[in-house]
Picture 1 (spheres, rainbow, N blue to C red):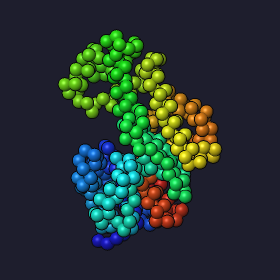
Picture 2 (cartoon, helix red, strand yellow):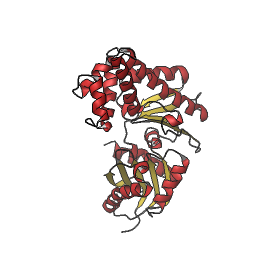
Picture 3 (cartoon, rainbow, N blue to C red):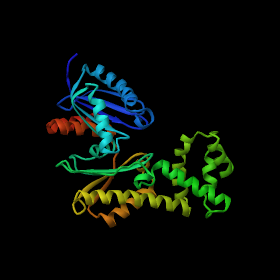
Picture 4 (cartoon, rainbow, N blue to C red):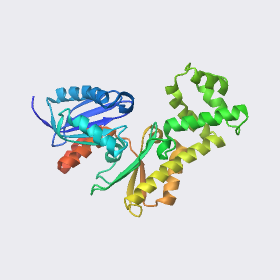
Length: 323
């Protein structure tokens, strides 16, 4: 085998990893899927070892052993120092002549625009926002949770819903339908029973994310507490987008604002409508739209940006991932 690929694109998230080997003309030579990428849980080397399995399968299918450039958009690359550490680990594998690591939110942004210009807000398990301009300027947040001022995301919304429901049942808080709906999701009759089940792990803690759709359904039914949580999430999304637009001096220009991640991609009407209403008031030139393209496409396009690909290469790559 020899070097036949131009770009090795990697989109590695907390639940799965997608890899693509792409030729200089934008043809996708091979793809592969792997498991979760979680350096904070297992360490950088073990996380990259897991990534290496998907890369090896993609290289084998493409008939390649290396590429010109590795474009990796990785979850948990939240700070520049983390990007540098992960880039060094990928560089040591010898997969490409050059390596660029970005936070995985950049993949969502690049997948949704025809040029590297705009802002993306991702609301999945957590929440994050990035922005970029063609001249290379970027805007971003640390996005490591409440420590860095973040609020919400699917996990955070579930936690807030549980908090309000528990207090409603025992009398410390305002009444809310969440006190019935959340335990009912697991076939339980009270918040006390759900608290006990979660605490004793009769219901695995990881299943708390299942409560986020319950929160949205309860809000749609008119519950005031649930609706307030949805409204706050909309406000957080718009606050991040507006700050990013301001930092990049794009607030007064027509600019795409891409909405991605499982919570935003679900297009819950109350959340989606409120986000658009707030953006219209705070950033009237913003052009909000939900990104449905696979984030690995964004990693591919960022790689093609770096290698100076011809316009037809971008069209060819997009066509592959739109199938």
